[in-house]
Structure formats: C-alpha cells, structure tokens
Amino acid sequence: MSTDNRPLSPHLQVYRLPFTAITSISHRISGVLLAGGALVLVYWVVAAAAGPQSYATASAILGSLPVQALLFIWTFVLFYHLCNGIRHLFWDAGYGFELQTAERSGQAVIGGAAVLTLVAWLIALV
Image 1 (cartoon, rainbow, N blue to C red):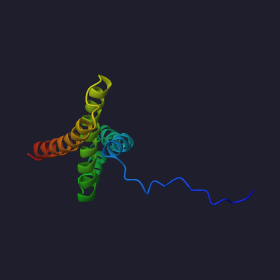
Image 2 (image 1 turned 180 degrees about the vertical axis):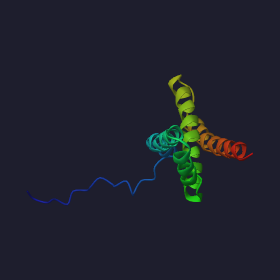
Image 3 (image 1 turned 90 degrees about the vertical axis):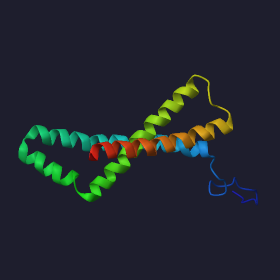
Image 4 (image 1 turned 90 degrees about the horizontal axis):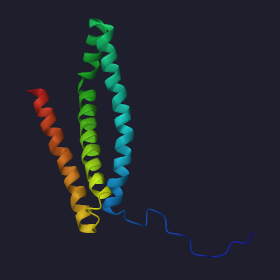
C-alpha cells in the first residue's frame, strides 16, 4: 500500500464536546456507578441479616470517612441520574429539544442533583 498525504479525520481532542453530549455521556456513566453502589447496599443488607457482629463490621466500614465521601458522591450520582431521567422523559414527550432549552435543562439537572444531595445528607445527619 502506498501512503498518501491525505488529510486525516480530526481526533476528539480537536473538538469541544457540546454540553448536551457531556450530560448524555455522564448519564450513562452514572448508571454504571449506580450498579456499583447497589452492590454496597446489598452488602449492608446482607450484613444486617447475618447478625449483630456482621452488622457492626459493616457499620464500621461504611461509617469510615473515605467510604462516607464515596457514599456522598454516590448520592449525587443517584440524584443526577434521577433528574436526568426526568429530563429524558420530557424529551420523549417532544419537549426541550431547542439547544438553549437543552443546555438550561442540563444545568438544572446538575443544580437539582447538588441541592437534592445536600438536602438528603442534611436530613440523614439530623
């Protein structure tokens, strides 16, 4: 084969992804992260069913600062996926496809997820 000096297709690093693409990719990633968080929830329930000693061990692990930070992030991911799912339901109904509306609803999803996360953790700590 001969190598021509034909132009190559630009790589993704050349392009700046639109905000709607970033929120779409984030929605998929959040779904995967939620599956991982569900495994932690299953561990907690199994430990509770296994008896007081197992539950105490699980509580010590899940109550540690690094795991609490991960649970805080997981809570944000949960609310992000929920809010973005509601956004997708509006899209399925045919609303919100205008570029400016889609960007504003994406920002609202992120803001709503942040507020819901803070509210949930404040309620849990009280």
